[in-house]
Image (cartoon, helix red, strand yellow):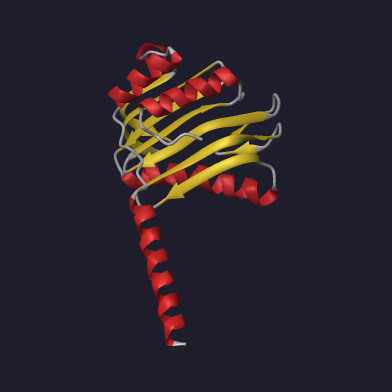
Amino acid sequence: MKKLSSLIAAVLVGSAILSVAGCSAFKVKLIDEKAYFEALEKNAGISKKDTLVHEKNSTYDGHDVEYVTFTDQDGSSFCYIRYEDADDAMDEFMITYDSLEDLLDDGTFEGSNKRMINNDQGYILLDGSVEEGTAFAGMTFFTGDTHYYGGYYVNNNVYIEILTLDGSKSDKEMIDAMLKELDLPTP
């Protein structure tokens, strides 16, 4: 009996060490806007001057931001926000995280997803679809089913979205190339 107790204790300690080691390996690289724009131009052919929104020291959804840029092109969406306050970046990320939880609970998201989150960083990786008219992460598309492929990322005060909304093979390859260049997890 004593050997069995020792064996169980060793297994529990070993699994605890592995789970802590796995958590400490979780990292979302902190990306600055220069690296973001280099990857955006190289992989999507979008330069800084081509973006729809490009502002410094302004507000976004009522929060102070040091830098915000957003653009979409041919069914792909790219967003980079550096908030003044890291809590605001995490709040923005949690809107998407909670929205995905709701879609998974109702069974309205079909496909794969990977999510990781801790106190100051996280990611959501998606390769799946929602039906026309389904609200997700503050957006509702009424023109047809939407296939999300890409990721949402937060690290400290930086929030990034890089995804395609049509799921074509060439768009997925472009998203993967951009994420790999930025050293971010891919779907």
